[in-house]
Length: 298
Image 1 (cartoon, rainbow, N blue to C red):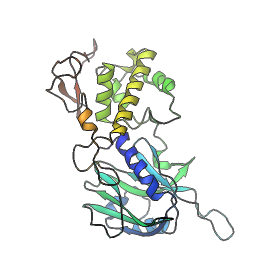
Image 2 (cartoon, rainbow, N blue to C red; image 1 turned 135 degrees about the vertical axis):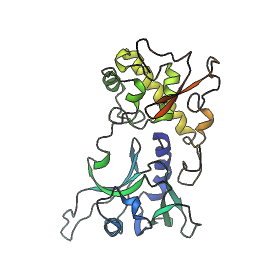
Image 3 (cartoon, one colour; image 1 turned 45 degrees about the horizontal axis):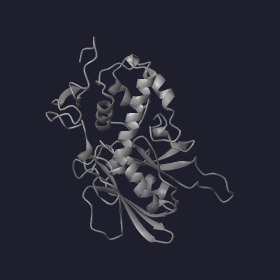
Image 4 (cartoon, rainbow, N blue to C red; image 1 turned 120 degrees about the vertical axis):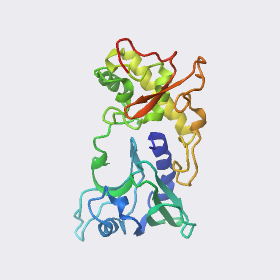
């Protein structure tokens, strides 16, 4: 599933193509990609056509584009402030194309935009596995309701590392489970959790309550460093599903130190990395650098 760097790469690429653009036409090719929308295709189209898009925003793995406020002839607001919300799910892609460009596989929704100074642009939502989707959702303080429960992420300017570290230290659960809890800190998935824990020399089952404040802060700093590096390299792409708005893959997979390296030597000490079952997924760690905490069964 795309994590914070992959979604942020899409947001950054989408911004110059849609900010200030007017939606001229909406085509819903597969209504299954509207599962997060309260109405059907006709309602989705009616909520968008004629609206002007603001600058794309993101929280964790949620991406949205604010919509201009609708008012009646007397200037009264027609509906609460809303936004076009996108969740990529397992395989969702948001692609920017020139009108008439060759079709993209698994395209579910098309938006035809008119961008001042440029002309027509087509935005396509493609999704092979259909776990993602688009929706028009009301916002509270600028955040769509479906993303309101999501915590800030480590690259957000308002992220309070000290407060998150204190909350992490109150938890008995393992640090990896805590990092993947989007109500504590958002945007981190299996890949970047493994990478940050390798950097911090922490076993994934280490209880949060066993960390000192300094160690917890160091872990969050390692998370931030991993995310920054992944962003600089365009995210992590293992197949054609994870691409930016131009359909290009990221190359952070070549910089991974832990995730996917089971059976290979640890880049730090040379010990053979191990891949272990964890929470219906897996975790990869160095058995020498990331020793199992005493008294904790795995």
